[in-house]
Length: 392
Image (tube, rainbow, N blue to C red; front, side):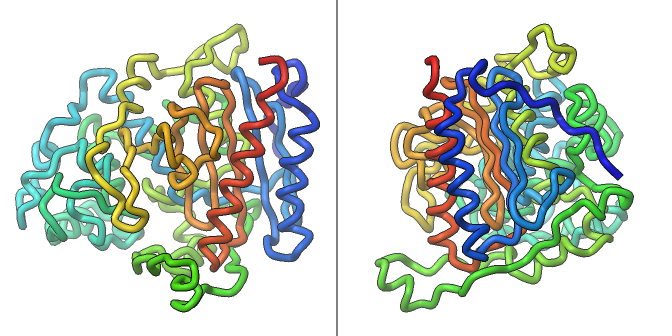
């Protein structure tokens, strides 16, 4: 069954250099031809329009991908609407919305700390299937204990904080947060292939997760004068579970989004406020002041415990910043105001408000070599940024 795809527009008309676009495609094809990645997909959008969308390797134009932590920006953007409507205050305590957070020192956690990974619960366990049972969900939250004092440091929360944000969203208005993603974001923006909780009817389109390449050893990291990455819940087994139909159906707010690269790139276009004559953009829900508030850096005084660089986090998104943007998932030449969120396995998603260009890259080939994966991401983002040079 064929699915309607997003309309493509002439790159040159939107100031996209076709030669630079070709260089970007060649870089993606390189990893397909080498046999490293089984499939990949990318999209570039600018000034509210999709200008490039292509799938490589074993994928098809209908392929969907799990974008893992790139999902965090989408869940966060739904919460931004509640903030915009004065139904959610980031300074409020989580326990004001979820009484189960009154236990084990969690009563001090604020909503802003959930967004900025400073809540003190980076390792709190949550089984995705528990989300469907309100009592199991409540018991899980109640049992969580702090790893450190909220607000005292930064440590990336792979899934825990977003489970809580999703629960708060539901507590505010009594409706499933995944349904709100559809009715408040996906449908008004005509992003039909953007799912949190993917229906079984679309599972045949999802590219299955594969782990590729050789894992780095302790000696490999030492040779690069780098510490070994910390062990987290983001393991090969955990990622492979997304090949399970039951897991794909769960709206995992911090890492379970399933979509095409086109949907992801266009989502970011909506965030920077394109509301032109196109019917698609008549219902952009976010006000410019909301985006400004959401992308304000709130963690400048904190350092990433692994990279040692300043953490630049807004409300659920990463900000590129003036320096070392490549260590935050962007290209060297992204503007400081660029924002987005990457995902496990090398997913890329960002928008650069200065060039009005958004870029998304998805792959089902999860590289066991994090250094190679990181370099690929920077290389692709550099090439995407360069595409906007024409006519500027």
